[in-house]
Length: 330
Image 1 (cartoon, one colour):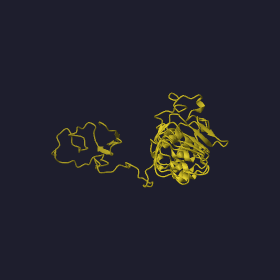
Image 2: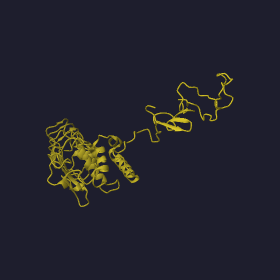
Image 3: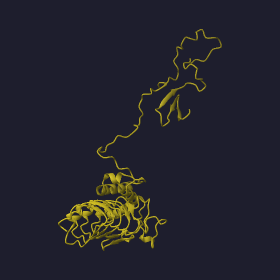
């Protein structure tokens, strides 16, 4: 039987191929041709011709009656549904499972916990998008990070945020940093322990400085070949950050409004890139800001008065497309 899987049981033949409904065929003799009759008398033939005509049916029933119809109707449904019903909420699409499925219940719980925490931080859409820097960072931490942190680890969010920064400024690892990027073949590094996405603590990665509590306080990526159209908002989760130095790269992002949450930030260098958009008024929440440099970009709009606090000493805004009057707070 071409393309099927035939099983014989007693006087029945079953087609049990996975793609079909169960088909049952009764038989009484393996020697019958497809044109033979299926009703035969059970008595042995006599030497003389039978006085009964060939049309007369046998008065004795078959010794082995058929246990079922020769064919089940094609409308009989499969015993297994073709798809499982959805029990989850329909308001949001489900987040795709990690690319390497967990093999134990412990791994599955770890994966689910990480997705829950990071969905709250980055948003459902970013985590569900398999091509986003956020999803790339999640996949890396789940399957490739030598530290194998879980959602309860003290530096879990910090490591995720700085890893997201790496993927966001390399076009999801399609481009390469000049120094100490993750790809050793494309990016030089004086010590492998400094390389981004190494198994060392992120405080030891190139351009990263931490305090005594292993909290990131400085990110210095000046002139390091950073690219991309989105500086990730996840950097705003680094609450102890004091210096963010991204000048002289090729970033074409807007300034995330979430940067206003960096209340300890003192120096923000974004000059000599291709930043676009306006200056977020939320930066006015950073009362500790001492230097703000966005010169030589492609920014526009008005200059927000909220930016000016007594702590602000250095301001670089030249070579942009700002317009309007200067704020009185200056």
